[in-house]
Length: 165
Length: 180
Image 1 (cartoon, one colour):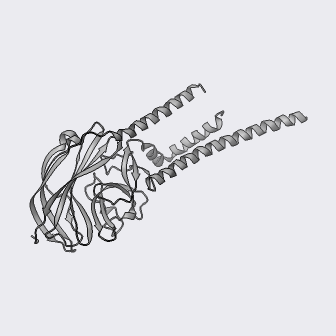
Image 2 (cartoon, each protein chain N blue to C red; image 1 turned 135 degrees about the horizontal axis):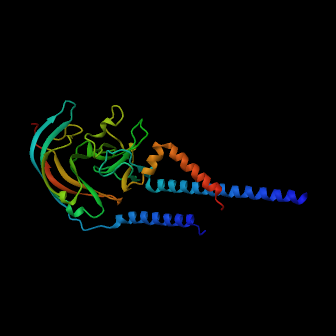
Image 3 (tube, rainbow over the protein chains, first blue to last red; image 1 turned 180 degrees about the horizontal axis):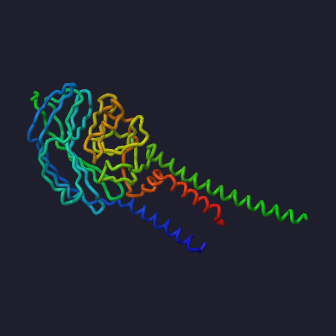
């Protein structure tokens, strides 16, 4: 009962348990988070109906965001992406991711970028003419250990043109 | 001669009893581990509440050897969630992020497209022949938390099974030779 083996075993078990407990409760520390973002559609590059019958549109977006307040000592990276959300007669919700980026450090979290959509904006059907849609900036905070959490900013008021071009 | 026979008998019976006790304690330990695993399955609502990341397709967020905690709820699947799914015909589940969602108006059925953060293209190459979208029944859970490095034990034991046998052999030896 007092041999080296037993003592080492109890010590190790206790240490591992405490470590696991600390890794878990880290998830409950929340800091003051005030992220902000703005998205502008600079140009509709083209808007076509594809041969297989689905609408596709290509946009140039101007994205400005400040996600620096999301970074804590426990943050490994923040995954940010912009999605277009809209409703059609067949589908109650469509979410199409247009662009995403991995932000590894706080310094890179305040950015301004102008790009065309990284992923193709294709509908299930041909419902995109004159369609109103929201652009949401989502972020997913991935910690060094513990619980991940995600949130978003919804920006509404965008719409697509009446006719193909 | 009578008492010698008695002594031999008593020695034999003690050994058998000790052996049985040890076997039962071992069985108790294995059964408790199984109970905890099944209880986790119930609480998280997922068939495998803990998975090990096997590939580098979600780097730098999830590296090979990390452990992910999964949770499955009836909440609808939305873009940005990290889901674990099984493709028909493959037995290893894949952990990637949802990038497109199309949810039907009436039935609530949903078409989902996923992509690994570190991959160039989406997962259509990984899906079954002719499959363009994932559906709800393919998805086993959402990743809600993670622990780094702990999964390397599982990876080593799977890729070099000799280590598994050595470990179990050593444990067995320890149990048999321990005095209590």
